[in-house]
Amino acid sequence: MKQRIEQILAEINELKCKTQKEVEEARVRLLGKKGEVTRLFEEFRTMDKERKKEFGRSLNELKQAAQNKIEEYKNSIGEEANAAGPKEDLTMPGDAFELGSRHPVSIVRQEIVDIFRKFGYDVAEGPEIEDDYHVFEALNFPPNHPARDMQDTFFVSAGHPNPLLLRTHTSSVQVRAMENMKLPIRVICPGRVFRNEAISARAHCIFHQVEGLYIDEDVTFADLKQAILLFAREMFGPETEIRMRPSYFPFTEPSAEVDVSCNICHGKGCNICKGTGWLEIMGCGMVDPNVLEASGIDSKKYSGFAFGMGLERIAMLKWRVNDLRHYFENDMRFLKEFNTSIEV
Ligand code: DAH
Image (cartoon, rainbow, N blue to C red; front, side):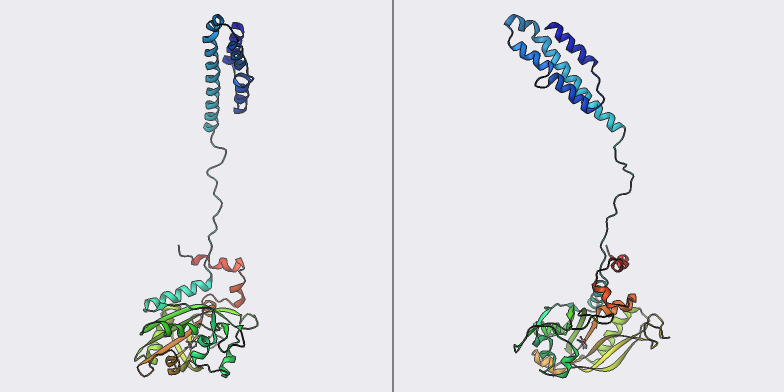
């Protein structure tokens, strides 16, 4: 026994390990279930008292020496590996974290909302699936009125006196505002609209509008003109001029279409404004008394103006996008063009 203890002790003293794997192997060889030291302890258990006295202490010291040695290697090999530096090169640039960008339509929508908020307008939204009453009837489109042909409607439920449909314009939200809000009303209503149009560079079955409505006592066409002029200058630059052309909408009287001076050629004429120096941006007018009355507003006491514009059209003018379809196809090459517009 004595001899074997000395042998194993010598082995422990000479033990050399270079890797953690070797340390583990040495541990199993000495201290594992069938290890050399473990086996000596098994033998020790069967010894008589006298011999136990003789070897007890040196056996314990052997075990301690084996444990110490293995512990030492375990720690020092780890330290050497650390001293040589981590395996990864921490100076390598990281994987780029791709930030999404805002869609041009939502950028324009936000700009318009911010401008009108400064003028004291609230923002209102309404349902995309609307009923005939809010899209047509309350806006002075009687049944079979030829003006309904101006807007090719997707019907959700037909054959009903007040069928459900996908709203063809956000003017429906002005009706809901008149029904639900206290006077005076100053509101803009951005949202998605739908028309049964063949998809092309200039037309799409989905697009976005912002509707505006202002109702109070003594609101005049001069107020409308001023509001639109201020908006146009905030949106397209302080030099911008506007021009109004007489038009027709069932829900406004008088009605007008608004052009802004072309901010690309400054009136000289270019291919964006088709040589005219003007770009059409919206429809507007004084809210027809029939429309006020339909929503329970006294048209003798109150008057108001309304306007509506297409967001894709404004974005097209701003960034000179020449095809409406780009807005809906989610082509990353197109969307990435607007990366710089991110507000963090
Ligand atoms: N709703 C009209 C359209 O979709 C746009 C419009 C024109 C809205 C004149 C208005 C307005 O509020 O006064 O073509």
